[in-house]
Amino acid sequence: MEPVLVIGAGLAGSEAAWQLARRGIPVLLKEMKPHKMTPAHHTQWFGELVCSNSLRSDQLENAVGLLKEELRRMGSLILSCADAHRVEAGGALAVDRHGFAQAITEQIRNHPLITVVEEEVTAIPETGNVIVASGPLTSDPLAEAIKDFFPESHYLNFFDAAAPLVTFESVDMDSAFFASRYDKGTPDYINCPLTQEEYLAFWKELCSAQEAEVHGFEDKNVFEGCMPVEVMARRGEQTLCYGPLKPRGLKDPKTGKEPFAVVQLRRDNAGGTIYNLVGFQTHLKWPEQKRVFSMIPALKNAEFVRYGVMHRNTYLDSPRLLDRYYRVKKDPRICFAGQITGVEGYVESTASGFLAAVELARRLQGKPPVDFPQETATGALALYVSNESVTDFQPMNVNFGIILPLGYKVKGKRNKNAELSKRALELLDTLNGADL
Image 1: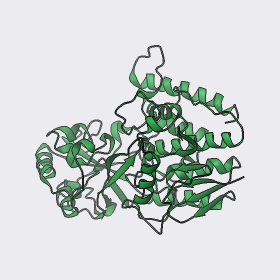
Image 2: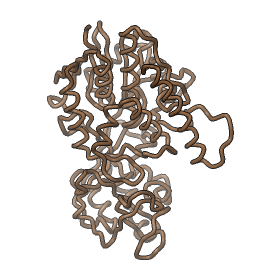
Image 3: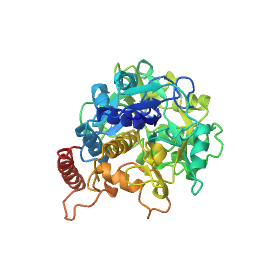
Image 4: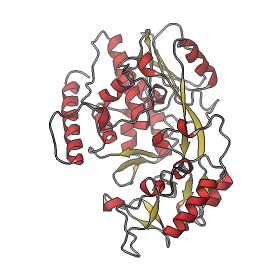
C-alpha cells in the first residue's frame, strides 16, 4: 500500500500519523524542522507547545475536558503522552513541555510503519492521499501552494501571542502565595496579589507601553481566546480584573481576603523551576515587558527566561472547503488538520488530526465512515468547521454551545455540562464498540 503523506509533525500531524499507523496504514511524515524553523518554535521535537504548557481544563464540566476524555478513550497518542508528563496545575492538564514533546517524537520515530523525512514541503502532491497539518505558521511556499489549490476561496489570518516565562527562584514569595482558585485541587498556582493602587499604576503603564512592530496587526484581528494582555487592558480600567487578573476565589493568607487583583503563575516544567504568566500573551517590546511586568510586586526582581512573542496564524475558510471528515470537498484524497482548519487550541488540533486519520484509514480499508454525532465534542467541532451556514467563519475552541442541547432542563450550569459529557461519553463508548 502506498504510504499516506502527512505534512507537519505538530499535534495534529503527529496524532494523524500515529492513528494511521496503528490501523496498519504506512505513513510518510514530512517535517521541515530542524532545517527550517517557524518564528514560534525553538526545538527539533514533534508536538512542540508554544503558547502555553496547559492543555486547559481536565474537568468534564468543561467542554475541552470532555474532548480530552473522548480522545483518551479512543487511544490518542497526544493525550497518553500528556498524561505521562503532566505537572500539577489544579483542575487543568499542564505538561512538562520538553518531556511531552520528546515522548511524542520517540513514539513516532520508533513506529515501524512511520517514515520520517526532515524536509520542507512546498507543493500539494498531485497524486496520493495527503493530510496537510502544517499548522498556523505554514511556511510561505506551502501557503502559496495552498492558495493556488483553492483559487475559489482565500486564507483568513489572525494573530496569536505567547506569554513570558520567569524562573521560580526569582519570584518574591514574600509577596506571593500558592493556591488554586476556590481551593480546588492542589495549590499549584503562584498568586501575585496587587492592591488597587498597585494595579492602577500597572494598568496605566501597560496601556501606554511600546509594542513591537507587527505588520497588519489590529485589535479586530486578535483572537479572543489568546488576546495580548495590553490589548485587553486598553479596553477598560477594570477589564483585566474580570479576565486574567481576576481575584475571585483566591484569598491572600496574610489578610484572609481577596486582593484587588491577582496575577497567576503556572508551572511550565516538571521540576517547577520555570513558571509562565497566565493570560499574559503579549507583543510588547522586550524591554517594555521587563519594565512593566516588574511592576507586579512579586515579580519586581523576576528573571525572564523567555519574553512574550507575537506571530501570525493562518487558517482556511473551512466551511466552504472541507467536509465533516476534514476532507477537501473537491478532492477527497486530501485532508487538512490542526489549526489551519480553524479549530483553535492544542486539544482541538489533536482531535482534528485524529478524526481525519481515522476516516482516511477506514476509506482505504473499504470501511464506511464514522459519523461522530454532534452530541460528542469530537463531532461537534468537526461539524462546526464544516458548517456551510457559518458566513463569518472564525477560529473556535470547543465549547458546549456547539454541542447538541440535551432537550430537557437540568438545574445549574455545571450539572447541565456534566450531563452533556455523560451523554457524549456513553455515545462514544457505543462507537468504540463498533470497531472504531
